[in-house]
Image (cartoon, rainbow, N blue to C red; front, side):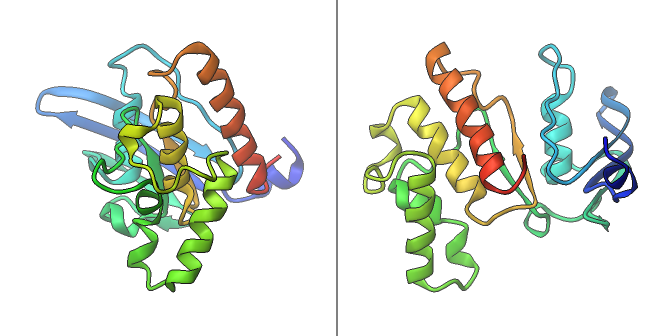
Length: 194
């Protein structure tokens, strides 16, 4: 770590985070700092709390105690809509009744962005994930790997400060997994992170 990075304020700070479901403690005393541009993976066996931690950061399951700061702002008790993140679940969570273009544009349509700008952003993202001609299709018409790329495009459409990926590659075959791992690294690099 360079001296500049050591002095820089962490982008995400988690302090003494606990999450309990009734008597079951899923997270206990979790503290960590993540700098802007870092690519961090949580590894561990099923049931160890990885998803619970991501859901707490996203505000989908509020922590029992502890604090979460993002870019110097305490987000500990904010609802998900007031946090700056994109998320991709293992199941992709695409809207089956919407075209691929509409899935990607979904979050953008509620921002007041002009339709022409939304169309341009959707086109840019389809190019970025290597599916420029798939926009008029529906999720069921795409392979699992293609659906995952669309879920990634939708998650980054609004250029979130934080991208949370919950086992995004686990349901894919080995060849597609290697390809998408490379694409995720390229997306990270494309957004200015070496």
